[in-house]
Image 1 (spheres, rainbow, N blue to C red):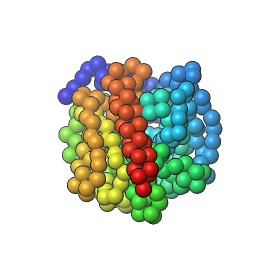
Image 2 (cartoon, helix red, strand yellow):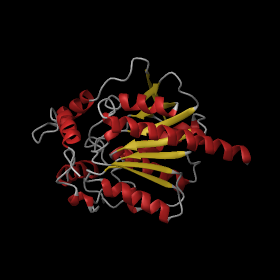
Image 3 (cartoon, rainbow, N blue to C red):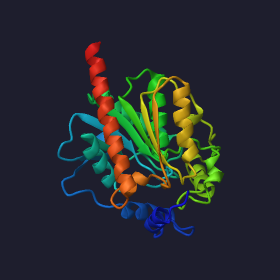
Image 4 (cartoon, helix red, strand yellow):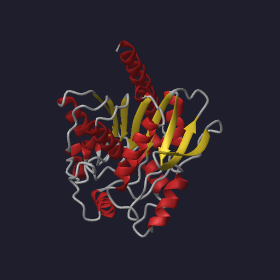
Amino acid sequence: MVSARVNDMAAAAYAGWLREDATLEEMRTGFDGMCPEPAADATLTEGVVGGVRGTWVEVPGSGATTILHFHAGGYLIGSPTSHRDLGARLARAAGARVFLADYRLAPEHAFPAAHDDGVAAYRGMLADGVDPGSLVVSGDSAGGGLALAVLAAARDAGDPLPAAGVLMSPWADLTLSGDSMDGREAVDPLVSRAVLTEMQQGYLQGADPADHRASPLLGNLAGLPPLLVQVGSSEVLEDDAVRIADGVLRAGGEAFLQVGYEMVHVFPMFADRLPEGAAAIDRIGAFVRAQVRSAVVDAAAV
C-alpha cells in the first residue's frame, strides 16, 4: 500500500508550500510554481467562455474535440497556471483543445460561486457552438467534484450532455464520509481529513456540506454521460472515486474505474516524472477519443 518512491516524490513536490504556517497567498503561488511548464509546442491563449475566464491549451494535432477542465485546489487554490502542463498533456493524448476554467476561488468567493462558474462555462461552450458530441467535461480533485456537479446540473436543466466526463481523484463528498478518509490517512502523503476540513470550511462558509452542488456524490447519479474515474490506492479520497463509479453503475449508467496501485492524489499531474501518471493520461486520451467517436456515430444514426 505504501510506495516510498511515489510518496517521497509527491511530498518533495509539495514541501515548499504545503505547510501549516503557509498563508493562502503562499499556497496559491506555490501550487502554481510547483507544476512544470508545458511542452514548447503547446499554445496558450487567454479566453472567456460563458463569462468565465480561462486559458485555452492546444498542441499540434488538437482537433475538433473540446475538453472543459476544472482544476484542483480545494476551491481555495489552483489556477490555469498550475494546470498548463496537465492541460497540454490531455490535449495531446485526446487530440483535443482544452479550456482550463479559472473559476472563482474561496474564501473571496464562497459556495456556490465555483459551481455557478462551472455551469456558466459549460453553457457557454454550448452557446459558442461547441457540439456536445465532441465535448468532454473533466476535473481533478475538487475540480473533479465540480465537473460531476456540472454534469448533474446540465442533466437536471435539460441541457445537451457532453460525450463523456473524466474525473481524476475527485473530491465529490464534502461531508467527508468515505471510509478511506480515515483508512488511508496513514499512507496518503498529501491529503488528510484535517486539510480537507479546512478547505471545506473555507469554501462552504456555513453552507450545508451535503448540498448536492457541493457534494454531487450524494445526489442523483442517473442519466449522466459515460465517466472515467481515476484514483490512487494511497488516497484518503479513494472512496469518493469508488462510490461515484458504483453509484453510476447502480443507476444504470456507464462508469469506468481505474485505481493506480500505490499512487497518490491526482498522480497524472506528476506525468513529467512518474510513468504511471503518463500512462493514466494515455488512458484518458484513449477514453476521450472512443467516447467522442461513439457520440458522432450515435448522432449520425439519428
